[in-house]
Image (tube, rainbow, N blue to C red; front, side, top):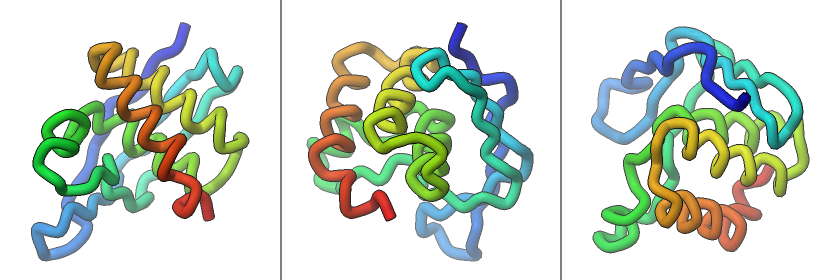
Length: 120
């Protein structure tokens, strides 16, 4: 069963209010979609959900499922799975944290459509 095995523990990564965070403890997620367990290490930097700050877009998808967003940032940084699986894990992990289906779909569609430039 997919689930987070630890809680997200983050702190502001800078002295500014710029949306940059650092994990202060590992975040562990067990994924059925990927068939493996991921560990986002302490010290990993994330901006959580990289959603455009356009009012309607942010209102619909921003600041939701911080755990899933931090995990997805890690997957996009380290590439332990193909991009399509990383995006599916975002949707799966969002479901685990209680994000409504319509919002999970919007988040998934957003990363599928506009996430490629961030898959470095």
